[in-house]
Structures are given as structure tokens and as C-alpha cells.
Length: 383
Image (cartoon, rainbow, N blue to C red; front, side, top):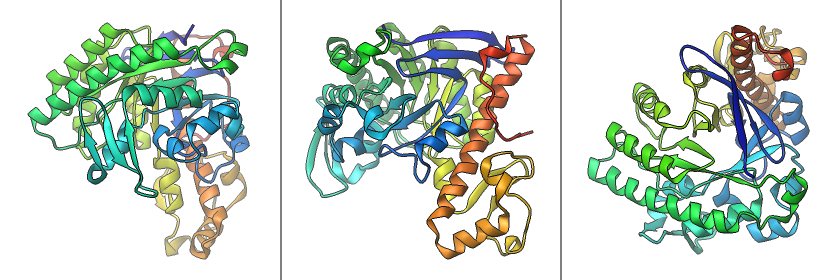
């Protein structure tokens, strides 16, 4: 049995309070998932992620396939055991990373030939190979191999990309169904197997998005993602595509928007009915000194913070804001200290996770749900 998904509250705007039961964790939704590209959420140890309330993180199939390799990870008991992460995990298909290697790849109906960004070696990814890698990694949720459409893209290009994505989705599902029981360590996880999500593509064309969603729903995946967003399009177009697709996806399965976004965006999308989101922005911005706070974004490298003895965010109760000052965080940035990326990342992740906690609490409160349905985590206020 794969995942099970239950909703316990739905707001007038479509926001859903629910939970996803997975082999390693029951995940409360809507949820933000920190990105751990190479088996690590950059600069943040796993125990701190747990203390922040992260219930599910991402691993990157393309990068982990290249280094350390999926077969060594399989032999060591899967990615959970390898990185010492006991909670839920999702792996992407590698499609977006291959898409980003536009100068190093060749796409055919069979799959994608590409050269490694590490050493230039040649590799060939097919839907079946992507499934094999993800099965070996052992994440709770896997993604079908897709072909991401760039922005802007002519309609003919978006149609061709959609044709490939739908064909590859079918092949991914067939291979997954035939081989998903080949992960022996799942036998101890209440009989639950890995789950597979299909990915809606179609560029910025409403009718193509509709066709993609309807065809994928016919294939009956465990959940559905909306991909090909945040690739350079205006924000109102991102919202338009999400709003177009959400009503077409099954109400009894999780809905995931990939690779978004800023704090106000993830809150908006959650209130529309998106159950899962991920983005590298909290940690990537943190490493460059950009902090997200209840007072707006601040660049901690600014001279005005040189003697600022206030916390990074006065409304935040994360471990960083309770202990450190803006002046100290600025000093770490200017000194090139590794601790800078860690502390900034912890705060930003706490802020993002706190937004989802607040949205879940609001949905819970409006529907008089029992408090036990949502774990209380010490998170920052984002009011």
C-alpha cells in the first residue's frame, strides 16, 4: 500500500488541512519541504531540522545518482539510513536538473542523454532509469520523469514537451508498478511502499495544462505535482497556472507545487488548496545574507546592522532569534564564517515552516478540529 491522504478541514478559498501517511512519517499538510539536494539541507544538521519541525525533506535524484551513486546508497540501506534522517523524504525525478543542462543534453523519445556537470562523463536517463534510481534511494515519495518546459516557450515547443512528459509518465508508472516492491527495508514500515506522483506540465498555456492534468489523472498516480513553474514567468502567470490546474486534480490525493516560492507565495498557494511545496530559497538566500522576517526581507550585510543589538526578527522565537543579534550575524557574514550560513538558514527555515504551521492552525481553528490533529511546534509568528 502506498500513501493515504485525509483532509479534516477545507476553507472557502480551498485551503485544506490534512495529513499524508507515509512509510517514515505522517506529514501534516499544508507542508513546506526543505530541499536537501545532496542528502543535506545545506549548512543545517538533521537534528536541527527535526527541532524546527521539518517532517519531510527533498533529495535530488540527478545529483545523488552522480555522487555517491544510487547503488552504494541502496547497499547501505537507502537514503534515510545513509543520511540519518528518520522522517519522510521525497526525491525528484532528475528531469529539472537535466532541463537546466541545456547545453549538455540531447532529448529523444527514449530519454535524455547528458554530460555530467562534474566531470563531463556521458549518461542516459530514461523514465525507467529514473524509477530505478529513486527506488534504490528509497524515498517515501518519488516523482515521474518529466520534461520541463522553459519560459518563454512557443506553443509548438510546449506541446512537444507535454507529449514527452505524458509518454514518460506512463512509462514511469508502469516501471514503478512492476518494481516498487524491491525495497526490502520497507517491510518494517507497516507494509507501506513508496508512492509515485505525476507531474503536470504544459508551459504557460491553459489548455495544455488542462490536457496534462486530465491525462495524468486517468493514469491514477498516488499524488499530483504542478511542475514547470518559477522558471522566469511573471508571478501572476504562476498563480494563473496553479489556479487552472488545482480544480482538475483529485480531491482525495495530495497536490504539490514544485519549486516555489517566497513566503507570501507559499501562504497564498496553501490557502488555495496546495498541500505540498518546496524551494531552495530559504537556504540559498540565507547564504547570501538575506533574511525573511515579519518586518520584511533584510540584507544582514547592511552597514546599518553593524551595532544593532536587536534579534534578526523581533516576532520570531526560533533558536537564532532568541540568542543572537543582527550585529553578530552581520559580523559572521563579513568574516566569512561558516556559522553564518547555518544560523541564517535556521532562521529562514523556521520562518517558512512557521508560515505553514500558522496556516494549518488557522484551518484547524476555523473548523473546530481537535488540537491533537496538528503538532505544536515552537515557530515564529508571521503575522
